[in-house]
Image (cartoon, rainbow, N blue to C red; front, top):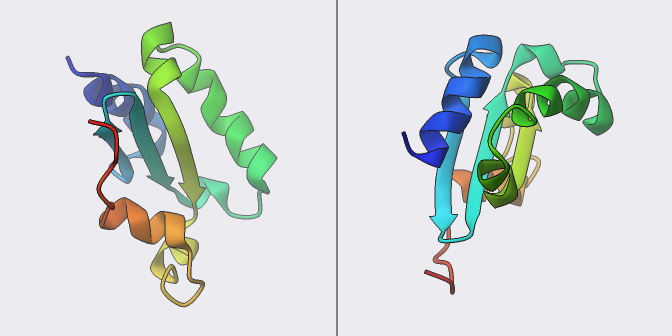
Length: 99
């Protein structure tokens, strides 16, 4: 199972199908979770929900996660209005200088 599949398998039981993980380059995996469970929580509160699940993954998988983007559905829907460049980049990634 690829690292991205391991991440999705660890997170989807809790957060559903709105979990997306992809390898940006040889040393970087980006993860985005869109969940109503994040409503009313600040960044730290959101991370407190997710981190225990991430910590169960093998160390080499954890080490490759460079972006963990945690959004509510409303925030994700308004990514262009808010100019959330990281969320926009997630859907249309720029080329990495590292392969």
